[in-house]
Length: 107
Image (cartoon, rainbow, N blue to C red; front, side, top):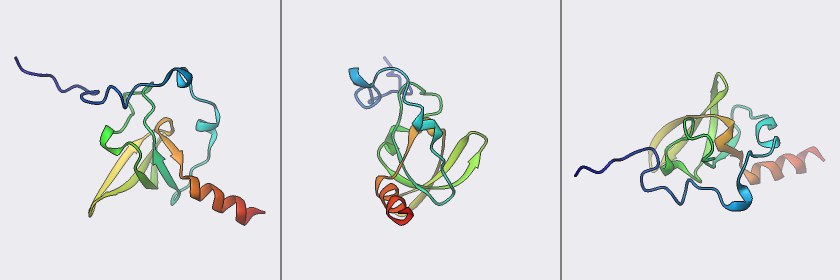
């Protein structure tokens, strides 16, 4: 019989939340202001699977290159290939070293 290859194929462990993470994420995840040129980390939230990028991009760091409505266009390089991912703020986090740089320059 033919095997199915659905949205969560081979990614049950990756796309499940741990017991302490269950429920809606905090408001700060949506209120963060992203600008063009900011670096972000793709962190897939399994609650919103329709807007989630493919699981191969989980944990990758990219650069915001634009907006499409409520979503962001993120440029990622896999090897020498350029990929543009379109996803909502539910699945992205600010790159941590970028946050520390802005805090040190602001003070």
